Length: 398
Ligand SMILES: [Zn+2]
Ligand SMILES: [Zn+2]
Image (cartoon, rainbow, N blue to C red):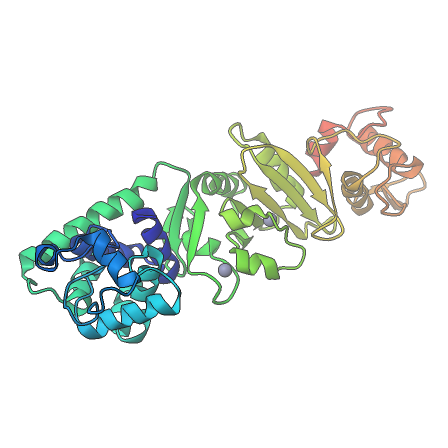
């Protein structure tokens, strides 16, 4: 309840911080965000206060609510038409006339019916003042619409902006308007993180910690980084087959990236070396050439996973440079199998062979072991049957 609740509800519906802060500036001016507020000058005349007036309207003992022209509620609804509408709306939804959520819903209902032009300005305003002025002149329409009065309202809106938008700047999460590109880092814009769903959401939360990691990836490899997926709202997430119900994409702290020409395992191994990184890295790799993507999120705890078949079947690994020896099992083995199957050498018979000619079966048997021994020998390491850190570096350099 209160200002944060009102801000959240308005952001959900309007999706533009300037519009919401401009609208809230007017609500604050009218009622101080108190949904049971009755116009002070009438309190003595009617012998009622905020609480008793609200109660009398709710229990039906006061029947003149719609016609008394007493300003009431968050927006200080005054005219008989609008007060009658508010009363009918409260009854229809079984809520008290002073209910905050009901009043915000009624406000949004008014905006989407009789005040469409106001709603349009709120959704597209590029400053708090623009939104605040328009709401004052076209929605609240108080007696005093002087420049000074307009400036006072806008000033309140700027304070709200400073608190709700700028105030969050120090934390890792920031919220952006969908479709409006804001430069987040040298090579990343907010719109790249927008939800891929259609018509399901209007804003995009993005972790600044995540953006930092992605920019480091971009700087390190020096090629474009494409986001297959950044933010995924809960509505869209539910529609994506294979998406986890607890997907971190819904929190704006996750990304699925394709680094041009760079194998997902190389990307993962680089991110793993970042000293401050704490999160989950998922290698989604479908062949030796590098098809697939790398999932990176900054959830705060480290975990690593390898997917080699599809988006849901994975193995957790301790790290991506885990040594592979005969008897090793799992999808990390498949990554090595595919790599060695793609590499060729010239044998003693003068013919070209693949380092691994067995099946891709997530299991290190004698054929893969022989391939590892040959790879090591060809890189100056005699009789070494282990696929260790040096091999990982040669195959998936960072
Ligand atoms: Zn969405
Ligand atoms: Zn992902």
